[in-house]
Image (cartoon, rainbow over all chains, first blue to last red; front, side):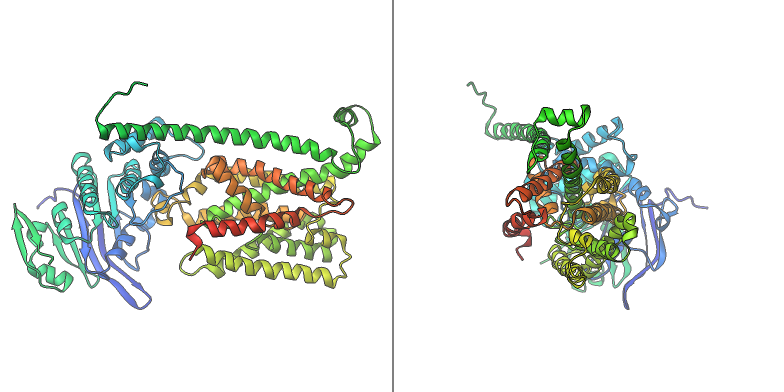
Length: 261
Length: 353
């Protein structure tokens, strides 16, 4: 009997969801592997946002289940879930005068007890989160005074301060210039490689998804159509399946490049 | 002054850090100064208010009359002026903190228990019980609270359309407010306008208040302010997007309901005793944010103090501005608050469209 090397960090089984009579997900199943970067991609309306919401406990599945370390997340308290999974949402707001340090400190919320201040461990993790995301130098500044790229790093730092094994990011590069897009993706890569955090993200850009991911999950019409190592699964055919358009695929230094023009 | 050249980039960055530090210190100092000033102002106003009016006694006489020997003047002041001063302060603190909580829950700096109809819902309920079951006077706060909850549910449900739009809340609130204050006035007129209990609520008149009213108001306000302090962390987290707050393990909807109930409690009880006051819950937190910042840890206690001060100031001005006649604090607040509200509306870019 073959022994599986490692249990998946998260397992999605036969997931269905619909808004009214409009079916968004039609029995999607997939696995998120521990210590890897997994990117969910697909055309507009393929169900990737819905899948993301379901996997982050913002929606309740109609059929199927999502298992985290063998436990159905539907039966988990929000605070318990927040101690195991951190999430960076696409759109964020804060009060105008909150400082970077205070905001990153909010990441400790799920670990704190009622009526207690930050413990030594909390302070250490807040410092660490700011260090890793390279925002320590802005710690005393108001978040509203930062640029878009810096602000995104603050939101990532808040999630990092949660100190979870899995980090979800919903299109972390939208609204950013290309330079900051790459900066954020490199930061995500660093969190994965240096700190072993399992990453699950939704990305819009096909090539960025291919370049920064160990695993691609391609959705089309509410089902998983493509799943696996981008070096193996990306081809003109699979892109056609996902996006309904014929695009050339080439290879540079062992990495696939989709010619998106 | 000697300057070490570190290269331009680094130099300007250092300057920025220094700036951050300096700004932070300045803000901290301003917050402390604001707390001290409002506390001192409140104490001064308290003593001034005791001594403003047709009956005046010296400070020494006052202390003597209160603690040493009976003095008819001091006794009159104690029975007539003290209750209304204390009620002004309690109700002012309650309404201002209620405003802070509503603004946090509805994510809307323009939310005010008076404007969005909570106060008039509570006052209508209080009017009903005062008119129909005066013997149930003891339950007035509870009934007013239920009226406030009903008004809040109406505003919340009617303005919910896949989310809470700040402007829609205000518009719905204005309509709910008009409905309930209309009902209360209609009732007041239909009863011939001669039921003093009803009139005092409808006209927000606190002239006839006694120590019994203080005793009714006090425990609820203290409990409400205590609960508000319990929820400061949650109020801060509600300033994030709902999804983000959820990702930190906060049950956003349950938290909203709890904080709303505290806000409704504070506004309703204050209204039941002191009448419906508009704009107080709007102006005080707004100034508080400028002076001590939007962290609720400072904003809630500051608003309590500043609310007590503002209401007492309005009441004191109201009873001296046209002696022997009295202008109610609610009227003063409306006259000052209306223009203030318009300025806020015009200045805030968020609500322009």
